[in-house]
Image 1 (spheres, rainbow over the protein chains, first blue to last red):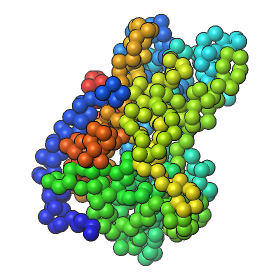
Image 2 (cartoon, rainbow over the protein chains, first blue to last red):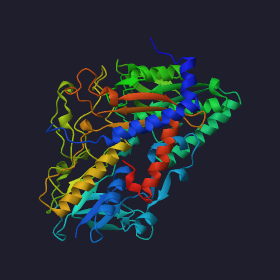
Image 3 (tube, rainbow over the protein chains, first blue to last red):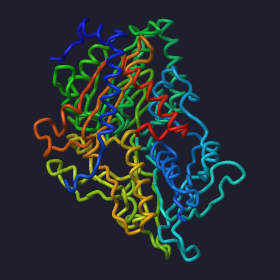
Length: 44
Length: 485
């Protein structure tokens, strides 16, 4: 059965204060993944 | 002194050229050959397609920037490759034809010591009968001009809705083997939000049509991702969003013909169906540019360089899905026949798909092609530039810089609606891009902590922040290189 977005979840998704902190968190998380580097696979 | 020629000035070509110019002394030549006069930040095209940005917000002219940064620029298109030169020209060269100004139509042998082919894909509209931007009420957001045309048409449809007309909107992929589902996904959510903003949402039936087997496949075989405190599949997340927005979906659909307001498609069950619409945005399939290559004596050696896209250090041995491994994917993007030719970004030929291949009961392949978005394009272009710099310093040097899509993360910040307070974005990161089922057997080939999804206003802010950051970086403003690819 398809999950639904509850009213509480929607409030959290669109609340600017909550989302400001989420923005900081997401920026750092994305940066960690990008800065986490990359490399080959054949000698691993 | 070395001469490096970069074909293309999109994300991969521009990243390669800018890093080469920054890191190489001035005695080395960096030449960019591109038929386009402008750089465009493609990920923001979807906002042009809903009228919330103008093309000028995401483009800038290349010539003044390259002149300032001592990068030679030729507004020309590559025609054919001569990696051994010819009887008159000892050095390898690319035959290019100027596309504008007094020199329009003039052909030139652009010689090189190192060549970076970053020509990206050809938008293969011809692959689907009747599919052409602006024709048959079907549009594209693949370029800023296409996106602008799409907005003009959508605005007209919105006007009709305000006058009481009920309409059908169809958005998705326009070919059985199309890729770039992510762009269509962003566009459908942005269109839906714009209709709500214009208070005409109840006048439209919005349908997603895609060659994906499941929602959220995105040409990456779907994902198992962490979402808040839950772990869910990407198809569950996208289904949740579509349900929330009242968007219908048609999956496993290979669109094969477009007529005025009518899309014909074949399903995986082998049925031939039609879907009518008043406005459509359908992503075409991508293909190589059909370049030819010749040896010193004029013999055709195209198969040494191209397999649709350019051949690189991938394992192209045909094998079934169950035997695909991350080791099949290229690491250095170097052509195996000519060590001074590289193809980062979308220009390289992938060894195979990422999504499980599927055929209809009639034998038609209906499977998304593997995506290569801005982030891997930038990363692969930078590592190619770094390897060339090392080769210039020491021609016998082993290539140290490697970046397989099987050992690389990617962030996809998908806009789900524009607006500083009403906007939304779906942030998805994935590691690795190509699933490694040996390393991560229990989590569908990916590392859970680094493969996550998030929905909300912050996603829109992040996408907007990336828009400004990457345009700043592309303009090579002070300390631009501190912004990662």
